[in-house]
Image (cartoon, rainbow, N blue to C red; front, side, top):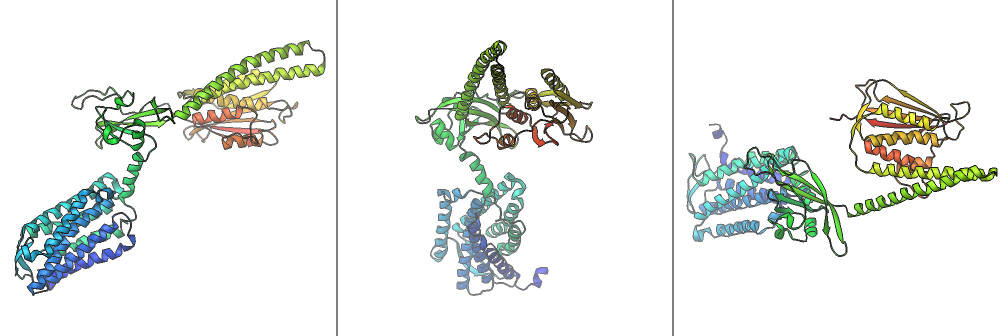
Length: 594
């Protein structure tokens, strides 16, 4: 046999397994402090004691010394399983279990077993009748296993199997991220584990020979792969599990998990505060006892072909008011409810997320009231001022007074227009439905209306033939086009360069971004004028997203363009034009209604 070529190969293999464990411990020493590393060092220490004591024992004929080495070997067996389970728990992000009473019982079992090993000559709980039984040129021994020895092998098998299960669960739960590391470490524990069980059950042609220490050699090789090739401790599942817990428990938004019967299964600390109940007290109670949220219950799982009467895979949202603390008062929450499914896609419950929108709702109400009052007063008062200004202008003979009356009339008209723009802003910030819009028809209508309202101006339109349809909010796109053209006309100073008389001139072009219609992914609207240009401070205010005392615009026109573009996902750019004027470019996304 090939093994006969290696003298005392069981001893050589056992010592090699111990040396491999020590080498791996040395290799990961710099990673101490990371999840699972300290426990893994304990695993290697126990394996080294197991392998080296057994290997040395195979070279010793003295039964007294051999009995001491056998005790050391059993010590390694006991603590290898305990340390391996501790590693698996810490590495997979379950360090809280390591601090639990259950794991403390496992450690206590190890400590009791250690005491029984040390006192074995008094009671024979581990073995009795130690006798020489040489094989393969080494001093193997045979003895009768005591009851505690069988218990240790059984318990250690359960501990290692549990650790392997945790690692395999990690492999399946987190996909390819930790697959190589977890698979290598889980599989490496199987050969010596099976060999230990076979030895305890006296299976095989040479039952007195324990092959587990020899099989720690491939075990060490697979662990070495996990450490070096797969970078086991550079990234570990603890990060993912911590992220999962943080995603729920550390959220400021209340999150409640419900069963199919609408009873609470789990809730995070934020939900405990809102509902005013602890997690344990809330479990198995219906959410209806705390909040008036209509959550549709699905059909019974056993009803074949039945359809869900509630939420069908999509998120449902509404609002609910909750009585908060005396300091906070009543709070308004946006409720998002979604179906909860298992990995197989089976509907198992619901998740309910409450987002505190109290301040947002207050601001919305305040802005809505201010907007409507402002628009109403502007419309009425500006109409009165405009009418009196017109009467004064017609009745006054003094040129200076006539000019003042004319200014009053024009400013009143501007105030009325400002009120209308405020109404446009209110519509833009509200949610709207997207639908198919023919951009060329919309632009043509806006240009025609602008020309009719400004007969002395020149408004040109350049549009190629083709399909100009996109699925966007038509009101928002219309506001962008209207205000872009209107701004160019309203702010013209009569000193243009395109017309001989210096009158207002605006050119509107609509083209595709690509060379061909198939390549295009957006429509490009360009509005060019030869006016005085948009002041830098107004563009800077738009780009900064806020108006200040030093940088403020002269009206709402540019803001309407900005907010309208945001509502349809368009981009707006402002550039100077030579010799004078402004070029405004609006990139409109092409969206298929489907």
